[in-house]
Length: 288
Ligand SMILES: C[S@@+](CC[C@H](N)C(=O)[O-])C[C@H]1O[C@@H](n2cnc3c(N)ncnc32)[C@H](O)[C@@H]1O
Image 1 (cartoon, helix red, strand yellow):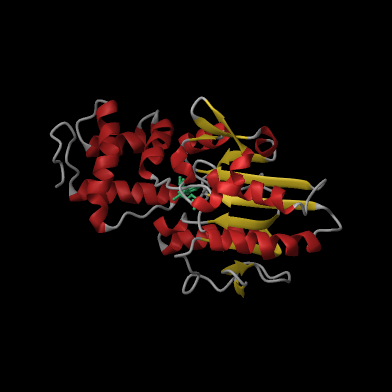
Image 2 (image 1 turned 60 degrees about the vertical axis):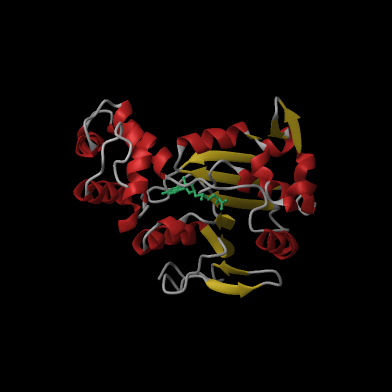
């Protein structure tokens, strides 16, 4: 029930509408009509922390207060869903290891460079998983390898950089062979230095017009379980940016429930043995 905790103000229909428009414009997230309670629950503590009366005041604060940028960061930290874990969606990672990485090793053999992005990497598990798979493939020894993770959430990027995880991050049993890349320290599993040195993290809002400006042209992008929270317009904006950043023939790996059907025809579907993935077509074509 809305407003069931008396210490947290209830969010009216009008406040919900204003706040969801604001967050949609900021980062693409779209809260459906039945998400009012979710937003109320996640943002209520922010209203209290700022000593504000209600969500109308909070909306005004986010729009006009001199500290609005900092508060938008705080709000983004609490409204995003950051669920992730090591070796998520294993059939796709098997396809990545057994088909995509060997194809990239052949294709880039001349320049000996590999560039991979995890867009919306949350607390970093996906990035470290990818870096470990690249390493375990032994196809890129002595290459210039760059594995980058980005996320809009400051808290997530800080956690990712720290590279230490509780047992819950290992809930997929298929991660076990990769456990050798961790050391148990102070009750947490810390990613080994050799792997940490091979990745980097940066804060990026994929909806920003200048997003990924410092990221080089990419061979593969993981953007899994990120756009499921966006509306169609925001999805298209992010996909246009990823299309621009991918080299022709570069791979786009989405979450298992995500399809580009009725979203864009700018990527081609490729049938691999273990999975279906997308690819930017060969050739110089720009985003249609
Ligand atoms: C559910 S997590 C997915 C993590 C990982 N890719 C996976 O599949 O396990 C979605 C992440 O997308 C991030 N995100 C949402 N909107 C974003 C935006 N506009 N720019 C960058 N990251 C965003 C969230 O902060 C969150 O950490």
